[in-house]
Length: 263
Ligand SMILES: Nc1ncnc2c1ncn2[C@@H]1O[C@H](COP(=O)(O)OP(=O)(O)OP(=O)(O)O)[C@@H](O)[C@H]1O
Ligand SMILES: [Mg+2]
Image (tube, rainbow, N blue to C red; front, side, top):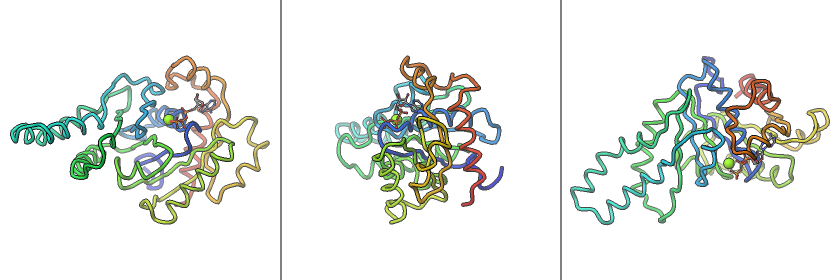
């Protein structure tokens, strides 16, 4: 596997609410799943709203947040024996939150901050999660709007950060804000960071001005796609999009652009 390829690495998808992070992550999953270079693929939903499972067509309600609740409960009410038992079971509980799907594994973070900051519990989880993540070759993370969440909860390290925006001014501004957070060292630097334009009406040539807005490389141009819109409207998994779908084609081109880029 080429060292700088997106496959075999940790890829995080961020951007303003509603710009299409989940749709894009799902289409990335679809393309990467079918690529032998990807190896073992883990897809992580880092958004507490946990919407990714519908787009992926995964059937589970388990999450790391639920494991965390269980530990907290034992810590608050449990006897010493019960506490020790939960601590011993931690790796098992986390493994149990993992859902096997067709050609990839899925993990939802769920609500992690529901009961304030319990740093020791978060540290425990963090270590167990790190071990789990290590067992995979390619890790795809569907984030919330900010990137801090991802770093705190899922991994300390991101290789490729993809900032998704639609054509809206506020979407563009969020990309710039995240870029600045990374530049100012609020989160560990990622090796590679670029923009993915999504749900853009019209073709690439009629949107040249949009590409010029960013200081970052623009890796992807995903058009507005009525099939994506209809699948989501019906609650049908985007993993079932037909092979020739235009948005999927654009996602393949995006991966190629990332892989061709310098780090
Ligand atoms: N390329 C596209 N073409 C058409 N519709 C799209 C496209 N990408 C996303 N959408 C639609 O835009 C809406 C928002 O997408 P999505 O849920 O993926 O955004 P999100 O960034 O994950 O939102 P949130 O911040 O709430 O998690 C959905 O209805 C989805 O079907
Ligand atoms: Mg989402």
